[in-house]
Amino acid sequence: MILKFSGEVLKDKTNESVIDSNIVRSLCEELKVLHEMELEIGVVIGGGNIFRGTFGNKKLGCDRITGDYMGMLATIINSMAIADFLKRLEVATEIFSALPMLNICETYYPRHAQKAMDDGKIVLLAGGTGSVFFSTDSAAALRASELHADVIVKATKVDGVYDKDPNVHRDAVKFDKISFQEVLLRHLQVMDSTAFSLCMDNNIPILIVNAQKDLKNIARALLEEIVGTTISNF
Image 1 (cartoon, rainbow, N blue to C red):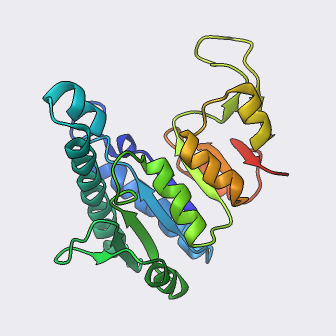
Image 2: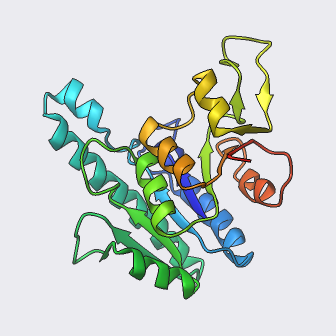
């Protein structure tokens, strides 16, 4: 299983701290619960709480390549924070980065990450894809494909996939299940097109859950409670 979190999930909304220790603790406690379910877990987290490549391009005036690399470094910082808390909870964990960071973490190779998961470690997959112009959604889809994951759980701030924007339309209808093909036909926004195509082509279901509202929704969804939306080839 690959868990995909946005970097914003770690951010304190009240004092603008980019990494809130209470949120990290809650996230790691829930990861420990999932780990105790004997699941093989890979975690991809964004870096948007610290830096977004598009922000650098628009606000700082740096070029897209520089901004994207800065964003990748932000994902490594977030992964280090999570790994440190997991170790305090006595959960075995290891960080693998697509960008070589030899004094900090292991360089990502699929077989090494798979070995760590086989050994019962939660694996943090940092540094995006290691290439510019790709989102962390794409990184999650790529790692899921390489590591033969059964599912990608995208932990978001929405309850699932709707037929239209529920913030604008009161009559918006949420799907419990929907096919990749119907998502494309309806032009629904789930992931960027590269990530979505990778999941569809490699037959990797995507589970959308609202983890910002309640982190326990991840476990509930994996236990096949009707939480969020499942996207698959059926």
